Length: 427
Image (tube, rainbow, N blue to C red):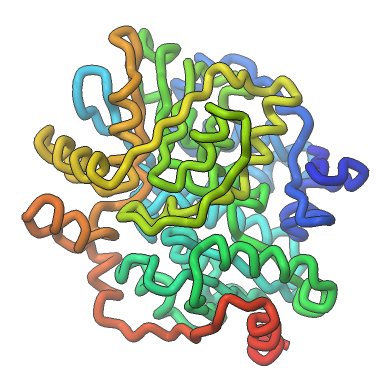
């Protein structure tokens, strides 16, 4: 697989280089100009998740890593499922929270970690990433205890749920967590500045585990095939996918799945009040506003990093812009969504509720809707309990960290402070 820098297409790298490098020159994202079309998709959809995913990933990167190595990466990373829960006659939830940190980012985080270990030849690596919630936990757990890898996680002060914070800030060892006095976009900007700083990039062997890293993005393609495989066969070509969207990596992965032959009918980008993309699709003007804090905090992003990849797919003819719509769901409707799902016998959380309400606004009678359940409702225990007025039990993964001490350091939203911190900790 050849990957091009979307800001400078003279920079062309292999998958291995893209994984190890993270970002290209001028903070450009790496992305291919084409995707392989899979043969016999109908047959693929009858296969078990791991076996099918190995075929998908081999089609993408097997020419470089080899079939055996790629299959091993998939098997090591995807050790949990992604069940499709039937909500009503034509609506399903794809549950992506059955991994070790109870969030969809376990899929991409673990695949990236396995890839880096495979490709690094035991050379030192520093992972620098920003999180608005679930990325932090997925990355921290995927890399915790791995030799020669240090992880620095930036997160916005007061804008991550307490249990989300506990999942990544209590591990210690090679996991360094930093509470930043700013919003997620400020954290993300600091990460980008670090990649532009030659001393930080080269002396600390910098890499990123955000969805800007191509390994994470490609891994996410696999669970869309898993979703469609669980639909009745006569409904598989009628699937409408509603994606709760913050950084837009999840939507990009869904569109890659369709480009590879998965029969998704259309897509819905579901956002909260941070609605840069819905406004852009209506007006053609890219006008990010100041980020607004919401109860669906992992989507509190006004400048989504992965949108350039989606734009590239449109420009390259890999995706049809007419098949993408967008919906903005406000706080009241988000809470209504949580309550409506509960009345249907399904306990959910704000991000999934945003996707559910967006789906219900536009689904037609002859369509089948799948909204993404990106996190276990207990990760947003206080919010869900306040909305429903009933207690939410903690699964073991969260109960084990609930009373642990937060080990984070605090920094201003200032790159110079971050640079000094990283060299002091890791240099």
